[in-house]
Length: 131
Image 1 (cartoon, rainbow, N blue to C red):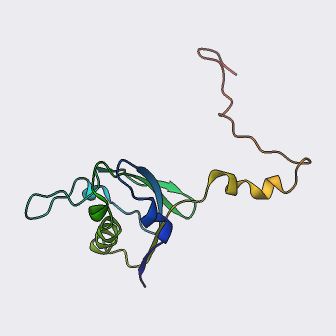
Image 2 (spheres, one colour):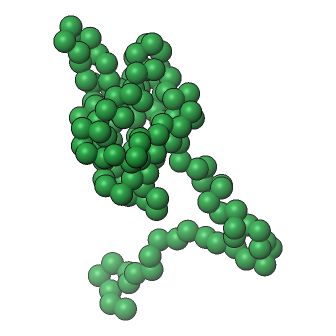
Image 3 (tube, helix red, strand yellow):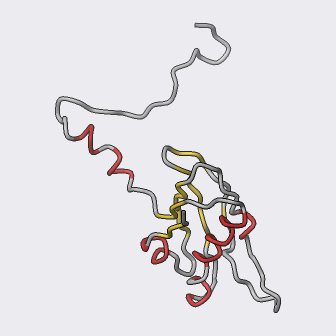
């Protein structure tokens, strides 16, 4: 049982970048403790901001704001994520970039033009009215 960090996640971490990533694990990870982590000398080691987990099929999505960390420091962020998951007792997980939105609809697109899928808000009664 290990925590795996995919290469795409590591290469996406750049100064001033905001990266959406996915942690595939059964337990909800809490990575918000990585926000602006400083070391014993008072130097910033962690990302500027890490969001809370958003559940999606297959794991949790999170957003990381790299801020103005230098590339040398950014290379340590995946290790910080792995350390935080281990500290939370998560022994098996995968940290990676999520699939592109277009990839998710490939199955429906294979049936085109016979099938189409649309995302729409729920239908409700007009404000103040009854249905």
